[in-house]
Length: 103
Image 1 (cartoon, rainbow, N blue to C red):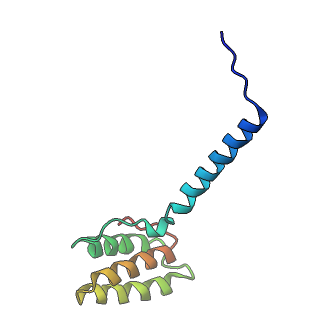
Image 2: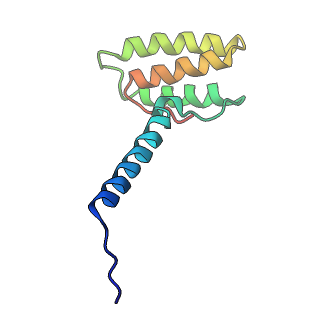
Image 3: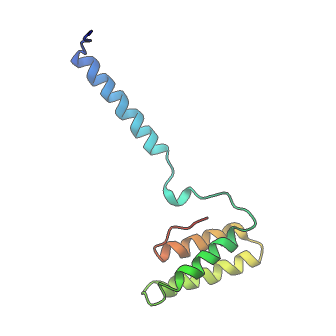
């Protein structure tokens, strides 16, 4: 069996390089709320259905009214053809209910 000697200077260089690469990878990863699926024709419908399902279980909570108001504004945007803004408002309404948006 052959034994390879690692010198302290080389080991610290390797550790520093690994830490730098890890930090760069973490810095380049967008936050979870920014990693959304691409918008398609059904995104508003899927998000609204998720909101309607979840809101039944969270109706009595203090933030439910705020989430409902955001959802109503989002539905209006979706119906008006502004699906990008409407979908983002629906995602925010779901986050207000402490739920991770499915779409």
